[in-house]
Image (cartoon, rainbow, N blue to C red; front, side, top):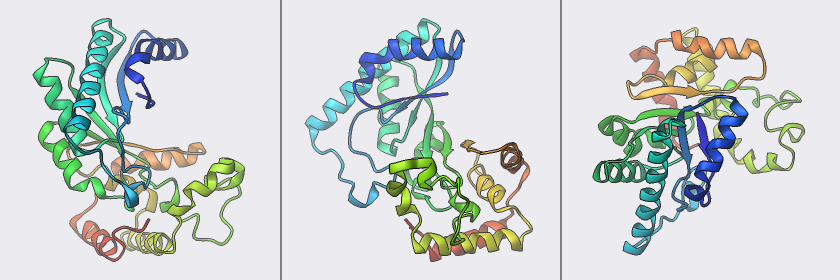
Amino acid sequence: MFNLGSGSYFVRFPKAVDASLKRLQTDYIDLYQLHWPTNRPNYHFANWWDFEPAQGKKAKQIINENILETLNACDKLIKAGKIRHIGLSDDSAWGIKQFCDIAEKHQLPRIVSIQNEYNLMRRRDETDVMEACALEEVAYLSWSPLNMGIISGKYLSQHPPAKARFSPEIMGDQAKNYMTRLTPMVQKAVAQYIEVAKTHQLDICQMAIAFTLRKPYMTASIMGATDMKQLKNNINATDVTLTDEILADIEKVRRQYPVPF
């Protein structure tokens, strides 16, 4: 699975795919995901507070022309056997529907997935985006199911691990850009979710990942790990079933802290 960065991506498509195939030492890519594919304003990566969408018929025309050109490029790559399926990354319900409609109108490859941030702290997609996925049969893939590790509780301490993700040691100058996720409200919400997990004798990370897999259209949860112990623990989340009682307790916390960052 690969994400193609924003920019004049439909021009660079063939070269980008060939470079990926060479690095991977493979003949084809199963799923090629388009990252911010139309170069329009977006509300991802916590940009929702000052989000202002593109407006007007002219803007829509340009966006749809970009989508059509992108799908034509994808069609050529699929026919060449270099990629098999396409998806989106960090897009909206409107974007999903446009890609589906234009593909059907012009008999071009249809998107099969959308990869967006989704976790206990970031649940905006549960309305329009997931409705689009459910009705258009587009698989939903959640990235950052642990909110970049915050849900684990390791930042509740005044002295988090030295090599934690948000430390300058790991992120360098970029660390400050993500510190907005560590608001006092986030910390309170994390503490409450950890209590829910303890009440039901669950590992907090496994509970959080299982939450992102609980619906039929939630196809995958894209997680990271710093060591094999973490990786095995996270993978075991696929064996966790969240009962109605657990989900009800999660909802109680959500209503207290609906938009913590």
